[in-house]
Image 1: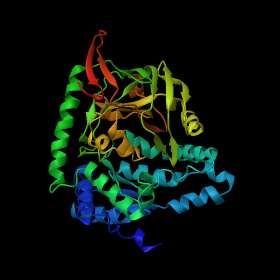
Image 2: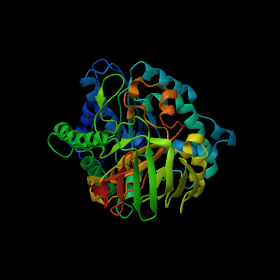
Image 3: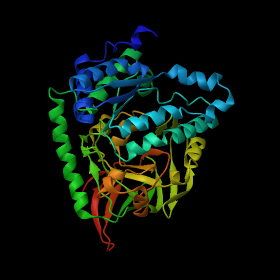
Image 4: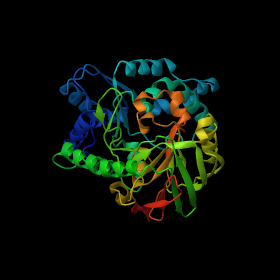
Length: 418
């Protein structure tokens, strides 16, 4: 392991990195005294892992357990492993994670790997490995999707990721640019980021509360390549910004976040829609997505790039062709204004309205913390091994809220709140 993996690049501001760690613990997780923390991260993000561990223990964490992944180890599998390897996954690890979450362990994920890491590998092997991992991860995913515990995702400017985002810059300059973009989007470039997040959460709550008051039965998206009606689940509830997990902890699951979101009805989506940004999924870029829905299910799907991988994703299970989330983000969001394509859903989804294939979130139902899975399904909630967001918003998209009587209310015009 070379030394640059162990310390932040000289172009990464250490004060802002420390603020990001503080925000991850105090705002993202709102870690409670005595609560354990399970943390996953790429090896390159070790400088942030260390700062998060420090802030977690200062907040009274019982035990911080990090799991680190390495890009070269991941590539070694695709280049040297026997064929049978691609149908295996570390189920024992995910069962342990699920057990930890059942015991109120908080979950934090740091993203920062090369989003194109597997783009040159056999797509059949990538699809098989992804499916095996999704199956094995299900016990843990159910705890996350059910919002059983407080969890959070943040980002670190890994060098391989930075080179993808800023290919014309030298590595050090690219890392510096990506670091500043992450810090700005994560609202840690000011003197009091915790207060900045409190203000931002209040603003998101205004939008969330208005939508909940309207009780729309559907949303209709219209624009270039798009005429899509997304029926909303019975008893759906809009969420945005800080939310309360089933363990009673108020947390921000995503840092950054600009969205308000809810659950579509799995059987009530009709029409066609085109992506407005590329989707980076498990090391493969999928671009130019165009799909058509009938009775909630994708019946036609194309992509200008990565179509084979998209097809494999859609065949993961029955729920993979149905929606589990619809989210509203104004075209003027700070991440959109940055003009940067991050090739990372955590950021790119906050530049644009988006939908997600697959698993719904229980918290997006009125009283969702008390609803059993069969009740959620009866109200239209989707179930799947996957949850994959992709972007459908732009400055040319209009959105109408459809009331139960069929009347319409403008929600977005030309990509902005109406």
